[in-house]
Length: 130
Image (cartoon, rainbow, N blue to C red):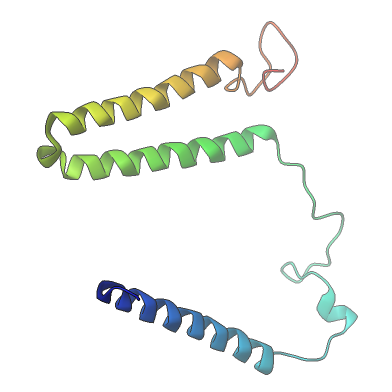
């Protein structure tokens, strides 16, 4: 038996799944059925493609992306804490302090392991902290 408070969630979920199903079915039914080699060719601003689309992105690109995600999530948590800081009191202050210290410890560990060495250093000509 579903609790009465969950009826809205169940109806919303069913409506969402039904809408997605209808849209996928309409796209399949209304979509083009014929294909040709020209239609299968990648299109890039009217220029015929040359070379491979598989590019080797450097490791620092992914590190910057991961740092952005980590610190973006951290900022969201801190902002949410700041909105209700007066209601949380000293307990909330201790919890956010522990949260920030854990993130700082992770950053310090990464720094000590050489994860922030993205270019060649004076001691070594090897890039990326290797």
